[in-house]
Length: 267
Length: 265
Image 1 (cartoon, each protein chain N blue to C red):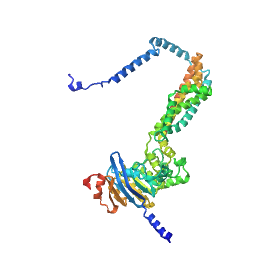
Image 2 (tube, each protein chain N blue to C red; image 1 turned 30 degrees about the horizontal axis):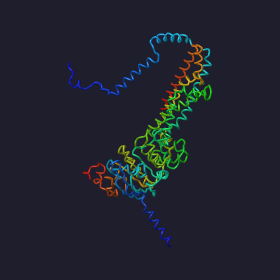
Image 3 (cartoon, chains in turn green, red; image 1 turned 120 degrees about the vertical axis):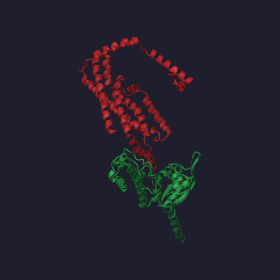
Image 4 (spheres, chains in turn cyan, blue; image 1 turned 45 degrees about the vertical axis):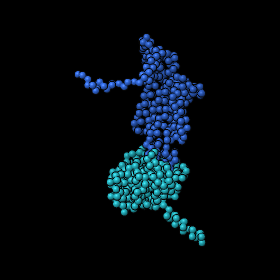
């Protein structure tokens, strides 16, 4: 009887476990405090837009979630893993589960789009077969091609990455992230340095992929309209703390503007 | 026309401080002393130039009688350079990884590797040849080893620098997904540094071909032995044939290397 009562409780706890929980996250660079005791819970499958003026700590926070930057204090639990407590080996294993899309696309320009996408398999494999598409095992090569097709670039598979346009290049970076088979996506200004149309296409692609695959997404964008359109929830950072947290459909653009301009009079 | 007061006030030269002045004077004194110490004199130049003219006169026309033997030696010289260079480049690559900032597994390993590369680079190949002639005996094997060590030093440094200068973005992306160190190196660093690797390898081959001629002078095989014997026997017309053959080989290698560089890079 006791066992029968315990099971639903566990199931209930699992069902309400957030994909990400941040408690008291703190980071300073020298005398400058970037994040000052930040708390945040993100439910699985949610697309969160992180907004804030330049230097508000958005990118720092994103990088801290996979400990590319070490926090000074606080706890983070991502996908059930206590990120802040992971030893180097466990941290590497954890990073494999999180896909990151960078502002700079970070492709190897001299290699083909397909080889760049194939690199995503390094999240679960190693060896020469993961370095170049020509050395890859047939199933990996096939999967890389399928990822490229998913971002609409199957016809550019053998084109050198440095000959692609900015938007195409970011698509290849997203395909590489898909090849990683991530369970959580972090995107740091994926629409920056792209023309408005390409930027919009990239944000649409990311949002659609996250929704189709049921993945949690945290995205930073400096474009207000993208923030509103391609997120379920908006979290605003200012002075090292969360000063805004509401569903995107309820957000009023006039009240968000100061997060992008950094001017108080826009608030 | 009178100079404006402002133009007068601005000094044309920086006034050197006392230390700079003393160092400059000492450097100049050392230069004059070096000239007097190396025994270079106008009289010797006056005597030497006609003697050189006489040697050149005796070189022509070049004697082609021993051409087949010279070409065989030239082929061995080239093969010696090629094998030594390839072995050196192969060994330089892992050493360069250990010596490169951001790729080396540990600072101690990095400094040891850099020290080894510096040692191989700074000791001239002729000295390595002398050592290997003693170690493995006269002949091309000693030459191959001397070239190999020299190229580890030369290519090791440039390979390491090329790998340090690549864009770190792709490495960050791969590290963020948990890729291994080998994965980072072979997926991101090597493809980006490849043009520099190719350029360095071709320069190494050119340098090895030029250097391999000299190695024969200390018994490390190849055409250098032929050249030394020709000069020792005052056989200047045969020496001329050898020099022309070496010249053709070096120019040929440089031309081919230039073409490969242009095509690949």
